[in-house]
Length: 506
Image 1: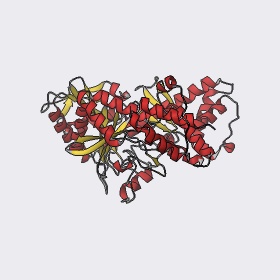
Image 2: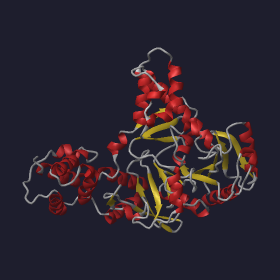
Image 3: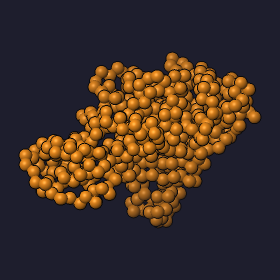
């Protein structure tokens, strides 16, 4: 395999897209040759126009990785690791990236984040090709126009492992998967050679922003505390959310509830999630318009949504934060056993998920009320996805799903393809012949087979029937998470809680 043109293609790609300085080309070439165990070089012409037109590095990096595998330099399971090493050679250093970002941010925050995201794609940190393999659709027939993604890029999380991680004091390096020390780290499952972060000051503390390599939506990323400290949602956290929105007004930013089963997958390290996305919940209208005499300038309402959401809107940042803190404090100790809400037993159960964004000159804050209590009937969580729906989603319902964008596990892609065969009669359904990983879908399969009838249906119709079923289940899961159910009793209980903070119906 003639590898020299591929080396030259990567170098020119880096000059065109990664700001590799002309004075650094020879240095970078020699580092690449060393990785490829080559000790001579013949320079070749490459298709410069085609390389300039690329929006990601796949076609220039893949031949070099394949060469390394074929020549025994790496084993096949080290492809991502080796690609990261080569891309890191031709990418800007973290300090240079931060300086460039800061220069752009002073002039235009949106352009700064756009540039940083594009650099992440071009350097192969944001895996655009892998992301594009995810199965996506909009559930237009649902009340909230939910968005569904089957994410084939990441493994399914285990709620029990997340809870145990919160209790343990990990002393490894890096301490967790989102620590600052991951920048450039490449060992085991953490291939972060080309991760580049930028500093952000939130609440007078050093934080940083990074984009997600396997994004759930456009410019999906996280703001992370530079210190490895556990997540918390208090007055300080709420203020930090507003600081971030002042830093980047075109994003939304949210904080998961800091408790197992209703929080994110990393509770051991303080962080927020956000990005350039209008979530389905953001588009939902007002169900009950509200008022508070002490804060007459804050527009407020119960959102017409599946779970329990309060929306606050005001141009006065300080007053909005002040009122949000009062709500958080009140909710943390509030119990109403008539609707199953107990704030605390031997552990804290009530928590909020706050989300902040801007709409013109106003701050908009949505507060999702959560409770992670369990009982004998619902050992995984009373306000969690109930057992009959966990074949589709068993993980914590974090802020992304709570806002209507469901990130479903990659295992569903082949499993749903198998169910489709049962519906089209390509294969005859038999409970006794179900594979072990398909047993969790037994009731759903039998329901779908019954609906499809004894006749043969097309693959298109089978796919639609399966999607309709998943859409319905996702709606039911969101209702499961509602601490105040979307019915008359639930609405009355919601108003009862709001009255404790001086909020009443208009």
